[in-house]
Image (cartoon, rainbow, N blue to C red; front, side, top):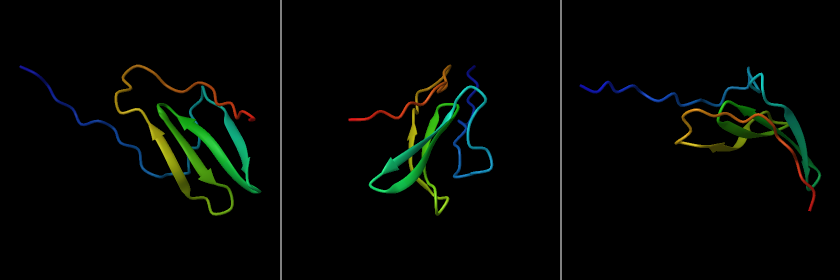
Length: 75
């Protein structure tokens, strides 16, 4: 017998920006500010002025891990 559970799928909620292990980074891209934050295995790019989630990076196969640090690099 196998038990099947539904997988947690996060919504676009800004009440909790980051998990306790991760940091928050500010990205200045073409004169616009974005917030980059992580909550468990989800990394979100948020428009600073509008407060909308622009892009999400989510590992669908993440079972036992979470993002612990975010670093914005320069090219």
